[in-house]
Amino acid sequence: MVTVSVQFGRGMYCQNRGDILDIGMPQDRDCEDAEIAIWKEDGEWITEEFKDTRCGNVLGWQTPAEVLEALNWASNWKPEEVK
Image (cartoon, rainbow, N blue to C red; front, side, top):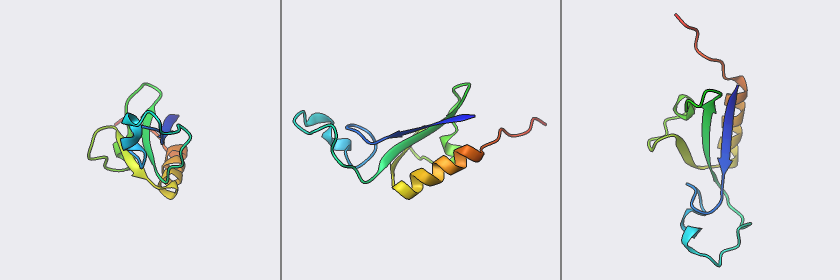
């Protein structure tokens, strides 16, 4: 089992990223993309097994279709067999 985090608020790697400093910006503002991260039950990050992040453990600016792709990937994820 894995966990998928989907974030699209202020300060995340998404369209609303720059809004973190704008105190007057409503928190429920629309956003066209999201930041995602994926990790295993033991806390090990596996986001890069899904797609190269190029910036750590999260993928930024993911479209709704890419978020759905990540959710589908995670629902089918199986640990590698120990050799």
